[in-house]
Amino acid sequence: MYLYYFYNWFGLYGRFALNTHILPGLNVSPEQVTYALTRANGNIDSLLDKKIVLTDPFQPLTLKEGLGPFFRPVAQEPVNLEFMLGLSFWQTFDEGQLALKDDSGTSEIELVTLQNVYQLGAESINRLWGELWEKRISYLAAAELMIPYYMTPDDSGLSTGEKLNVKINGRIDFHLVEWFALSYELKATREPQVLVDWQIQNSILMTLSYSLYKFKAY
Image (tube, rainbow, N blue to C red):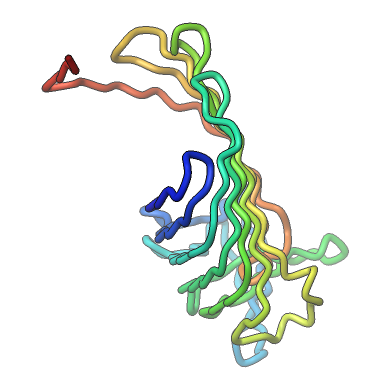
């Protein structure tokens, strides 16, 4: 993220983001189940197994580029508020990967085959963060929205509003000592070009840090 300030509360931003998963994604069941896999050509394969690989390492991989104005009406240690609104280009590379799209009315577990998607549209990034109690507690609340005006391929049958990409992120860090922090993070993501359903992730993180050099300003 690069910010160019015209004033202390207004300027232009440019950003590049890469998001992926290092490890493969699996669907694991306690006993053998039947999977109904819909291929990209429309054919349906039936598979019987306890475990099936959905995604390979580093898949899906999403690149995001954005450019536009930003506003920071509040900039203080306990509270910082920032809004960004710009033009965005997203590329999602997941050709041949699988995703769950289960129909509860059937005995099988339905799977669909994913494909690469390219989106051009408007994005809005909104962030609230700060530090409290002599910097022992820090927090972040963020919402990222992207509405595509052009998408290829566009065979989802969704309206423009239904194609809205949403990513909500909340995090709180407890800095117990200078070199150790305990964090809780909640993520809620909806990317209709990958999966229409919401994806919810809860994480508890332990962060260990060491500063090799310390610089003191005079």
